[in-house]
Image (tube, rainbow, N blue to C red):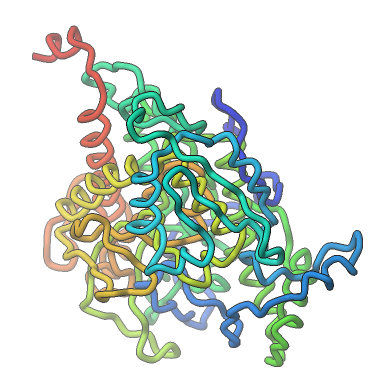
Length: 481
Ligand SMILES: [Zn+2]
């Protein structure tokens, strides 16, 4: 965490909880079995990178009388059902810098085909020829932010939308051996691992084999990717470089927020508050702390979120392995009806639309998922038809849009990798084999270590996109011939 310097860039707009990056303690990847805790944990059913809320009452927010908010005076409303968990109230006027930077057809295409499932956006956004009228505060139905569109006939003259990241085509020319020069990449190894592996339920163990821990596995992979990308000229930061949280907050720091939500929904489960505090600690608060780091300090051109997928266990107390194994890649989008109803999620979606994130993200995503399929040989995971939480991107195999906290908060293109099923029998054997150079026979076949195979695929996908979109200096091409 010592090398998070700020690259030259404009300030970010999104205000999230300010938290410093820190962490203590390093843990071995793949602890020996005898050191691991005895109880096998449940791997959540995770064709779902982000599970449903723990609280039992599914909160379709109730209306709140605006007068009640006024009455609270200078005391902030303890729990605001019109914001995402631990979210802060956005100031839509900050979107003023994007006036007349996007045409109506582009805005409408992104809104309706990528960012929102179905037509629930109509409750919040009214489209006119020259403007969109956007509700900015659900407590105040009359509060509207008006976004003026760029004139269609003058698309070329539309102002460049402010953003801290650069598209491949905006990067300066480079040489053929450094296709990633001038590119700043943040790698976000998903989850925390270490002491948190069990509480975050990204951990399992079969008999006396080494436990399989996602947080550890993605960090090993991240370190390999980092060195590969640096050799190709990129500047690379790890959002975490140990199996410890980025956030410095403790579980007690979330007590008030969790208790307020539990009280608001009148949840009576005895340990509901504690469960919510835990979730805020290892997931919601942690990802928000990482977003603060990414958006204010690293300000990268691209974030890579690394994950391994998992299938549900039939019997959590007695984990068994599955023969299912697959790959998919996620981009941001697909807000549900209840998500776009949150004032902050709607604002964050607008930032993505106005910065033109998707069109760049989509091209990187296509190259990324193609390279991953090629290197792993895995079939693509496909969501159900008419899914309410995922939208296919251009019907491209294995490429989907979903609204996850990380890919929503990071204010630049984000590629969210979900290859391999951790509790697949072959993947289990490959994790037991650990990381190694070259090839070894594992599960009856000669192969690369699973971490290097993953890394090679990520690197190849990025090279394909950036080398293809950038100007390559002629002299360097001649030298290499
Ligand atoms: Zn994960």
